[in-house]
Length: 103
Image 1 (cartoon, rainbow, N blue to C red):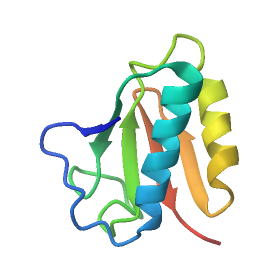
Image 2: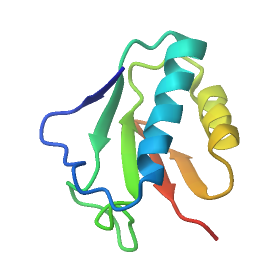
Image 3: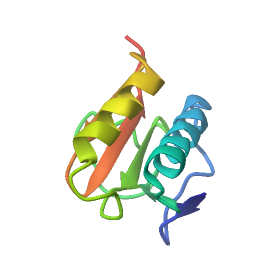
Image 4: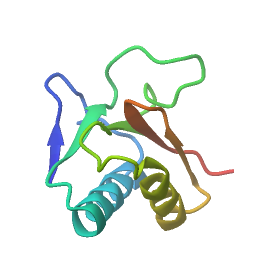
């Protein structure tokens, strides 16, 4: 089940592909790793680095501290495979960054 961290803004995502990404991340976490909630920690809100796609509505961050211990690499690899080459997926320790960035 998807949920939002308090204050997260997602109502103006410009890329519908980000809703697909959120669904895919949620399905993988729930069905393969029994994580009951997939929490989006950042959308259009927050401070991000230069060139970030968050302000353009093409990126989401997901909480990772509730992932099973020692499984972050496996989970990230599954998400990368499921989303394909049009998405950049980066495990950043305290969160997973996913952006729609077709090449």
